[in-house]
Image (cartoon, rainbow, N blue to C red):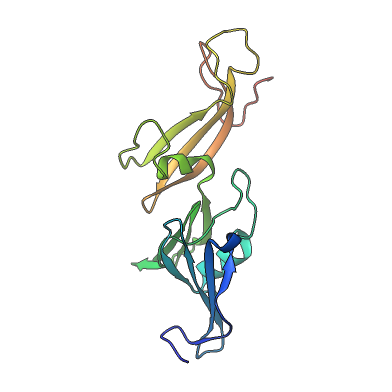
Length: 188
């Protein structure tokens, strides 16, 4: 059986405890690509493993690879690869992989904790802002002498093709002293 994506090379494979599906295809050029679907709302999306974006995603953090702050670095795809004026991107659950024809190459933009801005779990909406600050404390306390509750992490999240991804992060001290500068440690 042929399809617009090539010839299926095996039956659909169940992933993530039966909650997702992968279908591999062999293209007329002899390369392998895949379609992914999940039952938690990512939709069905094609990944071109022969291209820079699909290759990066497959080798640097798809749904099978653990990341820094998330169980998967990028997760399953949530959009098709989209190209405009020599720049391309493909969104996933926890980030965006970009490529440009102007010397920028292929770059993975992880959402990490910025994912809270993308999935509506933040108390306030970022309202499409270009850059958003996000501060998270494991146990915030109003007491000045609480050595654990007054520390956390400050995240600078930037809008990357409509998805907030991590630009930088630093440890932070909350309260009268404000936040530490990027690269500074609490005990400096």
